[in-house]
Image (tube, rainbow, N blue to C red; front, side, top):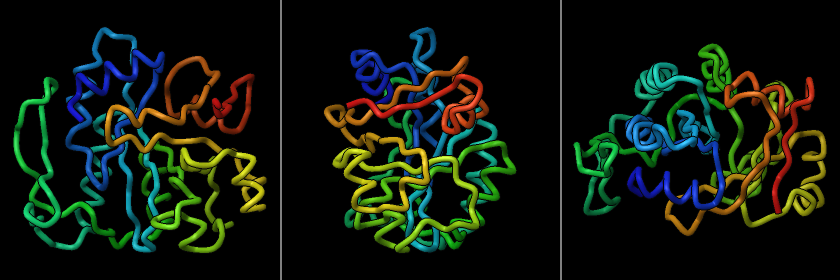
Length: 225
């Protein structure tokens, strides 16, 4: 999707906070942030990281600089494999209007060699928030892949896919009852803006997200039907 379409679709659906979480990549975040300037839509920088366990996790940050610092870490842990556009498709980097800037040569659909715990530590040290993504999905979901939620990682939240309700997820995976669940859209196309969460917080920051996920100081989060 091009940045203006992302912004337009979010606003049409009365969404005022999104995160750009491309797979193992942060190069297109700034373009969406620029496209959203003056609209009332907050765009958090992030990444959907694929760890060495082949688990997807959302890595969210307050600033572009934090996400770029994390990108440098991830780059150092990705295998040196070039993308084959004819086989895997193009990996475009665009500007705020969606115009082409360059192709990303590094193949991005692979796992890095960071473990989930190592990734959590790096993200936390940078001031970010890590949330395992679509934990119920057979491919790249925490529970089908690992069979459990690691208890040695102090996770604030787990994300379920848009194809299951929190109640259904907890019935299928009873250990989820111990965690705050959110629901992600995992949006790749405009008509996939599905799965939204209502956060009650003072401002759209990682600190406030932490508090909302823990239901502290009047902050809260709920999954919208």
